[in-house]
Length: 121
Image (cartoon, rainbow, N blue to C red):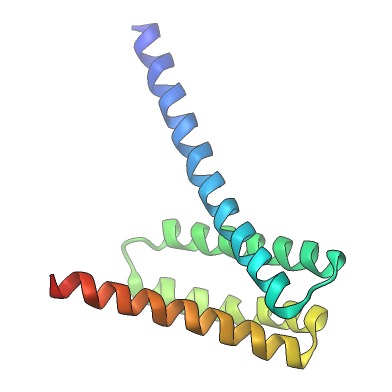
């Protein structure tokens, strides 16, 4: 029985680590792309990565906490968005921040297009 518990614990631990690394990989790819687009310095790159990772982790906590209450989850996430955007704007400045938003709008639109194409099939 102990072996079964240890196996279950190991599986849960590896699942958790894998999920976290996927988030970090995604943020890393976004930051690399933003560095290319916005021509970020190394310092800006690290700061943007840290903020995006913190933001995503905070959003994931809210998603878990309010998984059964979509409206509250959405409201809580909307409260945090401007806070993180302000921090990013302080680092990037206005012009780079506009390009930053354009990048994520484009990425979101591509996501919506792929979602529509899947529903058509």
